[in-house]
Length: 268
Ligand SMILES: Nc1ncnc2c1ncn2[C@@H]1O[C@H](COP(=O)(O)OP(=O)(O)O)[C@@H](O)[C@H]1O
Ligand SMILES: [Mg+2]
Image (cartoon, rainbow, N blue to C red; front, side, top):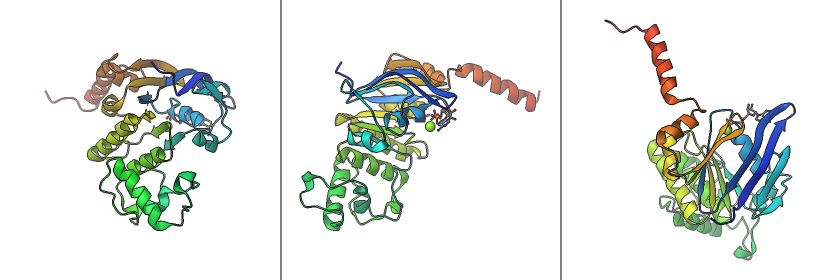
């Protein structure tokens, strides 16, 4: 297997007296989707925020292409190609597609004398970038972000990150607030990003979504890495149990059933 684009070595993270991440070692590869799984409060968001320069590890190392990196702020991680897309796409409802595409991104040499105030060029570049990603319904850069569906916003944000050279794409529950069709759309875009050679870190609670796109799975339980395995190494049931925080689903179901029967005894 190729050298990991990103690697955590024995990463710990505490907030004052609260230890949140415990000795996490994990490798992230280009052209793969890593599904980060775990119950609420397991430390998933803390882990990706540590990778994205929002938090600094209390101890341990983060390596990119085998070299240690130190991020003082999110911009440092972004400059190295680590890009986080949040649940609602992180875009602004009253802004146009073309305008939002270039927010916070300095024009690069690639665009020559281009500036973000060049509406026509901004629109052309944005529409072309999203269409190349298979989002053909977005064809007018003047349309407002607020008029896009949740899935379209997510997809636009992903296309934007890829366009500006992301190497590691971090998605924190991108499908959580979406309907089935829209979620499928976002999953397709995730697969497209993988096809283009990005490393994708995908956080989800939905086992089907994880199993559809995941090449590699890491499960956090109370801040520790409880499992790290590849596609095909565990059954859907095992993954579901791990996602529920290590509780066997069957036990949980039996408990719920026993409880329900007490509340509403079956009519004999
Ligand atoms: N800034 C912080 N200060 C103190 N505790 C925090 C902070 N951020 C997260 N935590 C704690 O870390 C734990 C993991 O949180 P989080 O990473 O958000 O979990 P997840 O994303 O898996 O639901 C929780 O107990 C949370 O309260
Ligand atoms: Mg979270």
